Length: 270
Image (tube, rainbow, N blue to C red; front, side, top):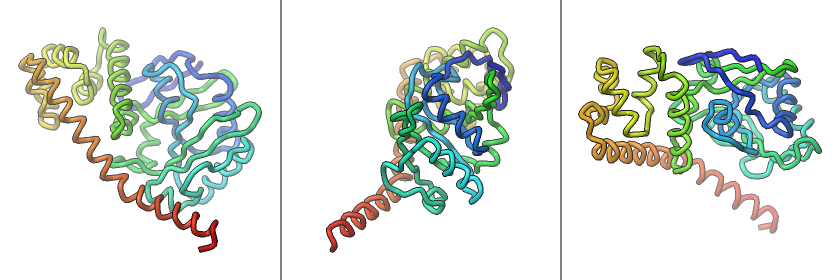
């Protein structure tokens, strides 16, 4: 697999893609010239944080032309919208996720989730500039959300996403620790969730730790080598992000519930 890097570092990615049926979905998107960024479980596989996923999560620009190309690709995959909201531009622009299930024989039961905006993150153009493109031997190109952006997107209310963040940053640390660049070190200091490793990095790169601590105060515990206090601060940090994510989704879930009630009333003729 030919790899090009973007974001904080150039990664040497192994051929971790599930060839079939995931490859069928992604190659169909590629052949229809759909602009998208791969995130979620499949991106985590590429970055070494996961071993298996049957879902495909995509971030797309919600332009009329691109959504038409995406609609064509989904039709080729015999994909049906399986939940609310419907596949409409305005829902995507308001931060909703639209969910599909594929029924093509080569992609049977694969779920595809599409979004156009991510909570508290840059717009698509900026995320695209930081992407990590990966090209396979057949010419198919996958554009991954850059690792720092993927980690930010994973800061949700779900505990399993925080476990994945830990795995992703640990994988990056193992790959780069022998010869890290400044950007790598600062990435670890910003995102590492493993107390003993964070203490090690703060000790080995004291000046960087002082700089990053201005935005991540819990690094004071890492610099002091206080693993107990650091672990507690990491839990508090996680809880804060989880609460922010719950607040973000609350009005969107209320909107989905309103759509569900409207659909139910239409079915029973009320």
